[in-house]
Image 1: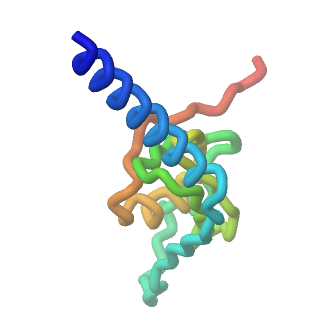
Image 2: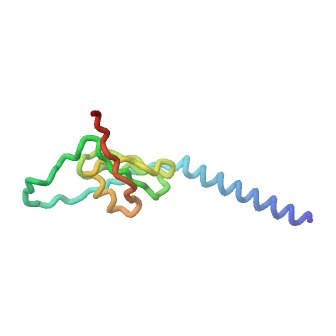
Image 3: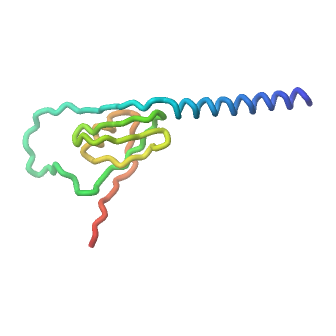
Length: 117
């Protein structure tokens, strides 16, 4: 019975130290910037294609990584910050398609603008 208790104590201690090490690593790691750009090719003019989205329209994107990343939108130049603790973010639809090309991001939902009537 003494050995079983000692084994359980070692397991619990190992588990606690492992968890503490993971938390310490996440707190002390430096964030890095990830810039996703898209080559702009010459396209014929399309009169019916809107270049500006509705004011307030956004796409909620989920980040599956653990490290803190700052993503710069290829169209608007806006910076979007994602991390293991802040996985969801609202992104301008013009930047979303470029960001979604990276496998760490996936779309969640469309955020409709709030209209005051």
